[in-house]
Image (cartoon, rainbow, N blue to C red):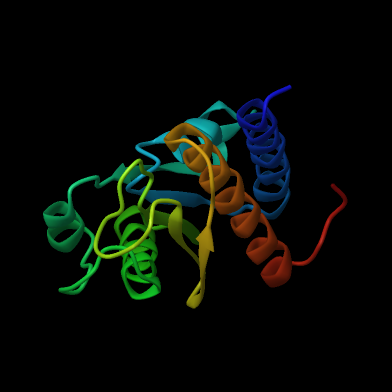
Length: 168
């Protein structure tokens, strides 16, 4: 199995764990994406029972759209500040309990002074925001698959931390 397939399979497995957790706890989630172009939403929507807990998402690929639609402040769209604004905005827009956001330089070239593979992720649960910067490697599709897997894992961990762990 290729690294890409492994990350895809892991993302699918994590989305199923999110489905169970959100269903068990009555939590609704949303996503704001840039470089992943809807891949995070696709995994969430494909998980069993997603109609009960997944509200939807916003794919804001162009920088000006992130600034206008998701209240990303002026400056780089590849920063913790940017993805935190994206997560907060989509959470408010969708009226959900939690949201995840991703932005980054998927390659093959860099963006906003960031090297290819630089990815920023944020999760907001209630009013608590966590963000992280990652440096992934490989071809653009490899970077996207690593980003979506990490974003879903970060969302699951934040929900477990806030609402209590369950098996899985």
